[in-house]
Image 1 (cartoon, rainbow, N blue to C red):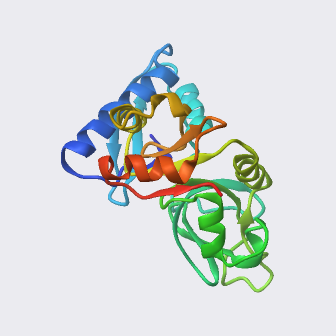
Image 2 (cartoon, rainbow, N blue to C red; image 1 turned 60 degrees about the vertical axis):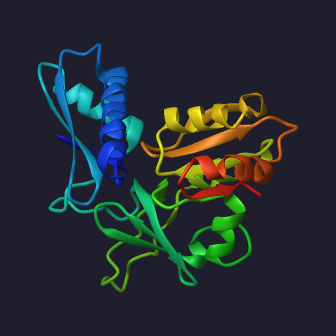
Length: 231
């Protein structure tokens, strides 16, 4: 079994479609290995893949490398190690990530320039449940623990978003649903691609001449989701 650092938090038909899509993604990742698998969802919405077969250990490693892995509660997080959590909330004091346990990233450890955490969220187009890499500082009850922080690779990724031609980030929708929505709104020619960030978190990469806020306004009525532009 491996618990992936991506969530399925929609319900009904949307949940069924998301899990069907997740099953296809797992097949792309490990389908050539000698394994069987079953995709499910834990009570905390993290996607869980049960893997069996001769290549099960290899398959679990591939999935963990591709998606990030949520560490079992009885193993715990190790100080100084890099993990993936999902962005659950933010306030004046920083970000709260869900990595199987809540991990707080203090505002001065976000490392994405000036401004409050909310301003950083708006500037970088961050949406709830976005998978985010971080370095764990240690147990908050340990007086010698360092604060947790965003990983250097994560900061680099987000700054790269700002240096590009423009992005619109979306949650609560699969990649296929976002692509179909852009097409339905008549804006297929205005995007380069839809980049998968998580199972239900996507990034619409705009062409050089596309205005991301304008694209948001154009497709917003078609897609009931949280959407933010990279400023």
